[in-house]
Length: 144
Image (tube, rainbow, N blue to C red):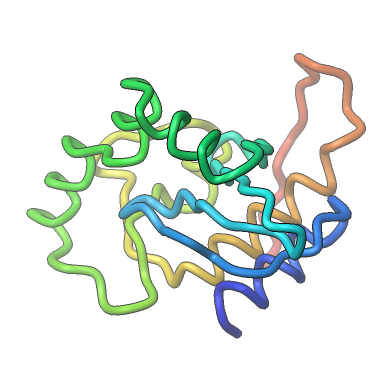
């Protein structure tokens, strides 16, 4: 499955008509557009898509220091490269699925994942928890 197909499958419940992935960070964050040309930012760690607006608004978003730090994630990427090597094409560095959901971004939690798997997984989880009140606690059950 391509990353765009995974975006459509995993995050289609949002009602966005996904058109094109514009950029991918080394940690799997996405900048993409819909069929109307609106830009969006997907943060897999936050399980969230943020509408950015037109191209000028997207550029402005990426000039913010916080966005640039999160997008590049230089300390994590360097630690992952040192421990895991270079990512093959179509893959990214990410905490493993459980570590990602728990917000554990330590170097020892990082692995290499196919981008499409990360997109599909995070979209599915976001769909399952979308109606929970803010601050809700939930238990993750791992099924073999």
